[in-house]
Length: 194
Picture 1: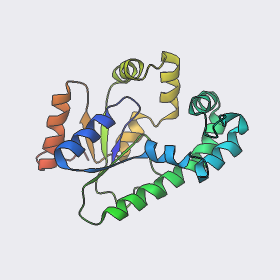
Picture 2: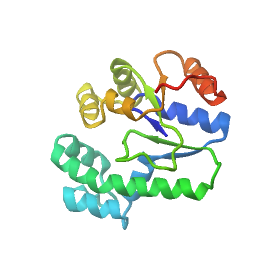
Picture 3: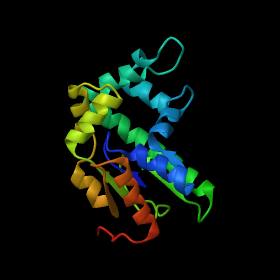
Picture 4: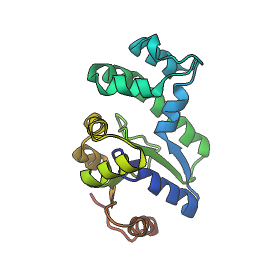
């Protein structure tokens, strides 16, 4: 499992694992998006918690409006997270199990599960400085500084990520340096962090 905050570079690692090691990839963000589709349990939960104002004319959820509401309302965010996170992790476990034993599956998430699944062999933390993450989110996603900092406040701290991690990938330099670390980890030459 790959963990780390928004803008840390988890997607870069995931792409490399898929392209160079044939990993089957699972992204918790994508699962959450699926659960928010009309008729799904996540959709019903979001409407119940945030109200019908989040439903667009075409019947889908207005994700931008939801983000605006949630980042300004920690209580609503916690209520939705408490319902959605178990749904997401249930789907993750189903997808991992469906791949069969011995298959290389990489799960990318900014969300920490309540417990470490028996289906996960290792947890890798993609660690990037706060300044680096801010720069990426503003450049690549067009986030304002205010929104970026609001996202950071809603995610686990570096310490929480490190506590769950078996290994740490430092993502401060070039993509090539990050790839070298991945290759070392997968060749078995890197020392365990714990």
